[in-house]
Length: 399
Image (cartoon, rainbow, N blue to C red):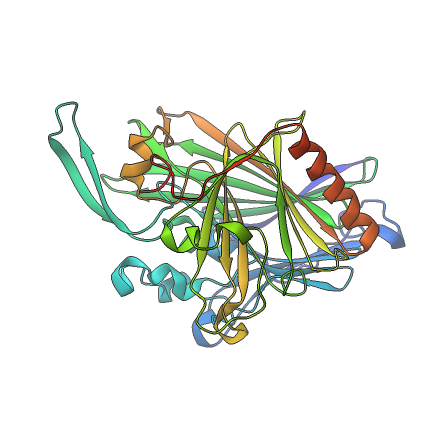
């Protein structure tokens, strides 16, 4: 049994390794053909992808492409040959140098949006707009414009490492460290770890955000988990135990009777968003599952509700060429303006050197039996907790 560590990137030590193919053998670990794995980092060249680093992880039936240049997001992958991700009009990873977040009235973040999983945060993650801070008498103390979904998805990691163990079934960790910092603007640090058990079609993300500054700091985090075909299609269903469900706005309210059922690619479709209060299992985890119409494939996200107490379903079933996708989005708050979330007590406040952790587990079912097991679990959670579905946006939830 052994635990080993390999450094891929360390800006301070001038380490950058895009040559080594990391395998159990290269690290002196035991392996077997059923759970053999490999990791390699490659730098893309050409177009808007120039300079983007991609870490390719191959582990049994699971393959993932991680982007340390883009906030340690996961670009795409596959599970037992089934593709994970979606077809965005943004077809390749975009280097952050080409993403002007202030473009198009503050929604320029979308110019780089094509990942399977990307983070929204750290300081804020909501809709673009003016964040106003007032004192107890209502006097404005500060005001600033915040663009869509925050900065973290467009910040590169300054440290990236691989750790591996052959203890028991084994484990692989890819860890990245990213600073979201500015002079007179605070300093938040994300330490993100992607964990995989060799041979399993599941993975885990464990994030820790630390306030490195001397003053208190605000934190918001939302995980934009974006799923397309073959999990998404005509008749696909979202399954998630919740005590309350509400439309974000009048457009979503129009579809409340079919809020968890999906259309096929639909010309003229305009996005619909639903806010929910998840039910936690005995371990404190919420559960969100997307199944295809036949329930022969499912994508499952589990999330620790102690720090991710809210869940957002984003339905965007527009034509395939325009980005046919749905988002399963656990969050520390709702994606409203930060001033709205602050007013309603959903913004995390960290004192100097204080940290907050976020924990998510992902499972991919590629046959009917695996999908049925996930659905039975969701059903048992919901049966034990009555659910209210609101027909209109809720005051305090929607801005």
